[in-house]
Amino acid sequence: MFKIITLMLVVSNIQAAQSIVVKTPDMEVDFTPRTANQMGSFYEARGFPKAMRDVLKKQCFITVGIHNKSNTKIWLDMSNWKFTAGGEPIVREHRDYWKQRWQNMGMPLSKQSTFRWTLIPETLDYLPDEHEGGNILLPFSDKPISITATFATGENKQGETIVITTDKLFCAEDVEEDAE
Amino acid sequence: MKLKQTFTLLVFVLSSFLSLSLSASNSQVPFGIRHYDIGSAQNFTLSDIDGEKYELNNSKGNWVFLHFWASWCGPCRVEMPGIQQLADKMKGEKFQIIMINTAEDEDTVFEFLGSINVELNSLLDIDGQVTEVWKPRGLPTSFLINPKGKVKYQAIGGREWGDPIYINFIKKLLKSDA
Image 1 (cartoon, helix red, strand yellow):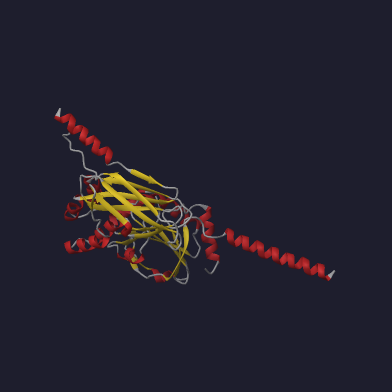
Image 2: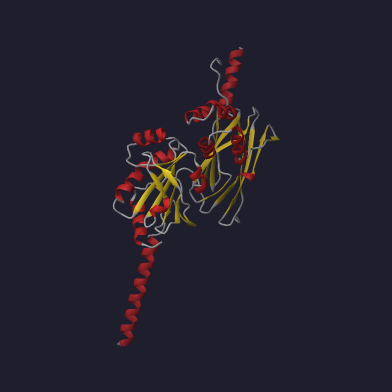
């Protein structure tokens, strides 16, 4: 009986950690949580040192894709994004934080560079039909994650503001082999 | 009678002007490419997979298609055959395709380029520092640099460079002094 319940919990968590797509008439934003193993494999295949991978394995990775479907510019500014876990605010570290952390650990420049390319840009003006994205790293939590993302629009950011919200995300966890 | 001739001439001149304007607007920047006048291209020197050194400033006098990519980037892989087609179509022109791999080692790049069956060479930005200076929007990103060494255009994401729309656009650039 206990095993069945365990399986149900695992399945429930897998489903919750699946992609979520938020659509508005002007843009589409998709959020895909990644497990530690998924990210660990990606970075290991790129020759990342174990010390780096060990740090990254402890993070909650969410891959974000942003598609501008409007006829005007949409401005990404990560400082306008708010995150909570279980209703409590959580902090997404700026890419400068990671740069400093890798430098302090003496990690190779090439790996620092590749790592930065896997992150979502801090700011970007999305042109009509442009589709770019990257990873967001949050502190790992087993509580539901909510994201509120605010985007300016228009050539000079004077258009209507778009706010995207989702509160159905979970950090993805690897399924244990013996969960049967 | 003279007035009629003058009017006819005027109509001819105006229609020619209109025709030229329409032609110019038709040759405007294709989808996915934007004007990007940021001034002089930042010079760099890198080695390619054969160990040959290349310096960007030595390409002055040619249009340069500067392309940043990585093997782990899906759209980069999709875009490569189109870049090969572009290279084939532009052979003999004052046009150079300069590819820069971002922060991967020689073996990875060599193996990748072989696996997708292209004859393109690539420079190796092994520590990623040239890419840091150029700050592409994402990978892949391409820049078009004019013969005077000024950055003029930026391509957003992967494009089908073998498509006549892009090839014709680049051919027109070569004829212009943009």
